[in-house]
Image 1: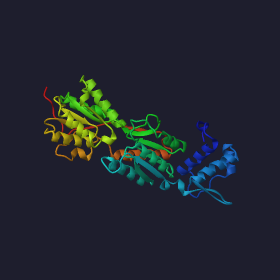
Image 2: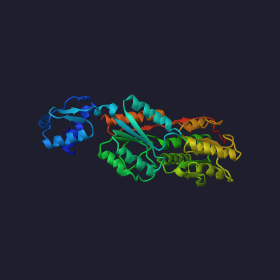
Image 3: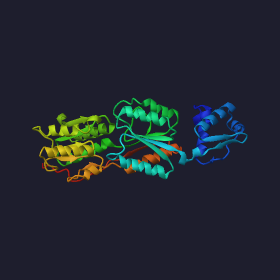
Image 4: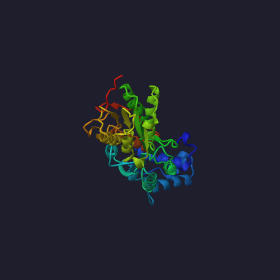
Amino acid sequence: MTKDDNYLPKYYQLKEYLKKMIQNGAILPTQKLPSESDLIRQFKISRHTVRHSFSELENEGWIYKEQGRGTFCAYRGSKKEQKIAVLTTYISNYIFPYIIRGIEETLCESGFSFSIASTGNDKRKEEECMKRFLEQDISGIIIEPTKSAKPNINQKYFQELQKRNIPYILLHAIYPDLDSAYIIMDDEKGGFLATQYLLELGHNDIAGIFLSDDLQGVKRQAGFLSALKKYNVTVNNEFLGDYQTEQMFSYPYNFTINLLKKKNQPTAIFCYNDQIAIQVMEAIRRSNLKIPEDISLVGYDNSNLAVATEVKVTTIQHPKEEMGKRVAHMIIDMINGEASRPCFVYEPELIIRSSCKRIPN
C-alpha cells in the first residue's frame, strides 16, 4: 500500500498488497497471514476494511480460513494454478499455429495453463468468447483484436477486464479507444519497404490488394501509398483493391483477373499477405502470364505458402513463434506485477526471393 494508491478504496489496496506478497513468495502456501488486529495496526484501517479484503481474496481462491486458527495462504496463488486465456482471429491455419505454439510453449514452461478460442474475425464471436472467458477464473488474457479497423463494439468487456484488474495484452493490432499493452509489427513500414523494393527495381505501375477491416491491412496500404508518394509515382485507383474478411477467398483472385484484362496492366502487385499472393499467383497463371517475367509479386508474413510453389515469393518477415513466446512472457510479467502496460513493435524485414524482376529504364 503506497501513497500512489490513495485514490483506490482501502480494502482494494490491502487486497492487492496481500496478493502481491503471495505472488512474490513473501507469503507461501499454507502460511498464516497476519491477523486482522495486526493489519489494522499496521495500515491504520478499520476491521470492516480488513474483512472486506479477506472476503474477496477468499472468493478468488487466494486464501482460506480455518475456524479458531486464522487465515492462510492457499495454493491458488502459485503460478501452476493460474490460467491465461488466448483469443485469436484464427487458430489452425496460415501463420497462427506457429504463434500459438510459441505461446503454449512459454506458458507451459512457466507453469501456467491456458484456454484458447478464435473469432474467425467476427465481432459477434469476439463478444461470445469475451463473455465466456469472463465467466472463468483467468489470471490474464492475450487478445488479437477482431476487425480492428472497425469501431470496437465490445469495449465494455475490455472495461470489465480493467475493472476486475485482469491484465490483458493486444496482439497484432490495437483498438485506438483502449490504453492497453500490445505487441505488433510496424505494418506501415513493412508496406513501405515492400513497395520501395519494387520501385527501386524500376516498377511504377504497381497494384496493391489490402484487407480493409483490419488495422494491419490499413497500415500496409498506408505504407504502400507513402512509398509511391515519396518516389513521385501517381496512384492509379484502378490498381487499388480493398476487400473485407468475408471476401478473402474470392475478391483477390477476381480483382486480379479483371485487372489483367485491362489495356494498361500493372507490372507488379503487392499483396496484403502470402495467402492473398497465392490467389493472385493463380489468377496470373490463368491469364497466361508468368512471374516474374511478365509481372512481379510481393507478399507479406514469410509464411510456408511463400515457398510452397515453383516461384518463391518475395515477402516481409513475420516473427510468428518468437512473437508468441514474447507475448506470453509479457502477459506473465503483467500478472506478476513486473510490468503494467508493456508495448513492443517488431521492425519489418524484407525477404527477397525470385518473384520480382528489374524493369529496364
